[in-house]
Length: 329
Image 1 (cartoon, rainbow, N blue to C red):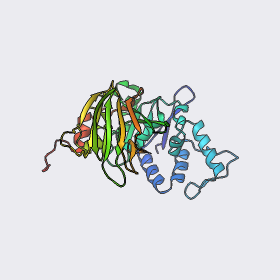
Image 2: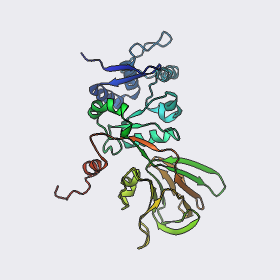
Image 3: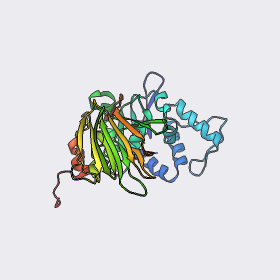
Image 4: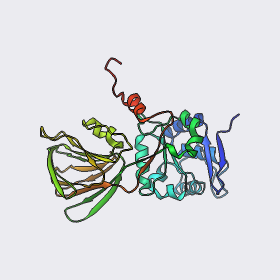
């Protein structure tokens, strides 16, 4: 009988664990029904007998961890270089503390986006394994990951460096907030859903004021996300450029534009609603009061996306977004 997990020492005190696809599938189903039990089962697969004498025997199926036991499990995972779920979201520094060569993300595009933002300025290569719905950035199935794993770990030519956005917001009272975006920075009108006025400058030069439902500033990676839904152009993801796409502008002349990434974009919230927000990658939401100023620049770090050697970017767009296909099929 084949082992559930194969251990490969890396020679510097770390160990790489490779799980069989059927084990991954079983664990994913397990975690959907019982996240805590699934985490324990994963640890049992990776490191049988990890429990020490100070921790009471734990039932994988029905046990709910106490705070002390949860802390012990988390520390054991950290010591073993294994990160899971909320460990990454709540303490993003754990990714870098584990000193991985690359990060394999099991989930969908949203999981990848949150993981990339968690790594901030110290980006590691991301291998996306699609366990969600569309999986546009999650380029691998579990079977494809198994077939190509050796090449993934050895071929740096599979890594595509992609531009990200460095976003800073200055409120009217002078307080500041900053964040990183992989796909886009979106100003949404919000309740009570009247049009908002957004004054846009490129560098030091005033450009225009858009009245409408909001504004999308996207990367080429994000060109196939919210930007696409609002009629913006599709760009090849390796390009360095900003996409500026108004959302339902109350004008016949405001159209999407593509800007050089070496410039900066400044958006002043001239007229807002009580519910107007600034949203990064559809996940990080921040209220945007009137007269707040958003500054957007190309981030110093780059999203290091590992591509599937069986696909190219156009394959993904045709097969997953059905681009260029006639209505009749």
